[in-house]
Length: 214
Image 1 (spheres, rainbow, N blue to C red):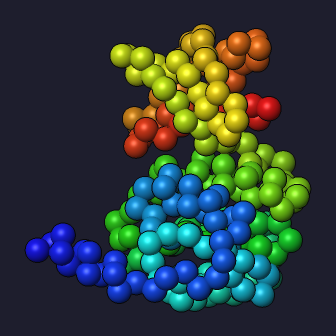
Image 2 (image 1 turned 90 degrees about the horizontal axis):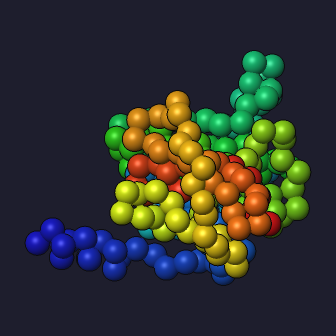
């Protein structure tokens, strides 16, 4: 019965009301990497939706995006929030994460109730970096450091192979990274080229590197 009800709700959802853009995939990957997220939207300085992704009615996603873009505008007008970069709002029924982007854009993520926020920072970072690359934005220093990657592991759970875009290669583990949160695991690895980087696994088997792989 529960499965049938879920299928019925999915069938009633509205189809996309605008063509997909280069941002669609980026937003979809973000939704898949943030625990509890079910939709995300990129809105411009006027609150207009540039693109969206996720499992929700497009109208609801766009209204949320427009609302939070107004909230950002009101907040940054105050001296205390002039350098605002992220808003996290936990609600009784829905929660939201808002990332302020260059040139007046904003990223709005919609989450289910009781969603956790501990594992969202790197996912937002990776999304912001990908969007900046696509839109030719210049990010503030210290932003867009992390990149989401796919990783294969050995029987001990240690990384053996990474894939990002067209790049796919073996990695050699040089050591572990300490002082990470909870169930996170980190490794210093070396590529066949000799390049070294930090590789971190978050709960849910989501992996990130902290440098451009080329």
